[in-house]
Image (cartoon, rainbow over all chains, first blue to last red; front, side, top):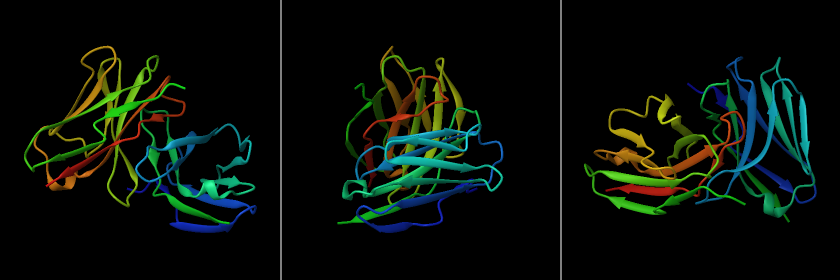
Length: 111
Length: 113
């Protein structure tokens, strides 16, 4: 039951360029979305969130876009830095007491 | 900045043994969670806890699992009789309202031999 999917397992980007990480969901009841970054052997670190009443949220280098009709969200990182190299997870909630996580995308930013 | 702390960072146990994983959520948070990640796989929801009771649990969270908030600060996950497939990184998380971001601990790596 993969309600949240990240179809790209990995992505490589040159330093200074834009990184675009994608996430698709199937449950139309999802109304709050989170992005997390995770380094090996550490817990996920919150990056940015978006509510379904918005289609964009920006925080510094990170912008999340939400397309409800397509059930798709994306995280843009610009400019990308080597320290951004990590696994990125999107997560979704439908107002219940849990977030469903995607499978993750490993981002590698090349210096 | 307040943190969620988890102990131990690593736990090795024999199959069939009981383990207790411990967490101290952020002090003013009301919602508590356990997630796990099997190596190379996604982060999976196990259970959420609010107002001293389980709010929601996944299919993974069967009768072998239990959670407890024994005092005002600790939140524990007990696995009664561990199986090989329980080997994973277990993450505790807490949230002020349940509708905002979750704050995760650094995890307990459980290895069942």
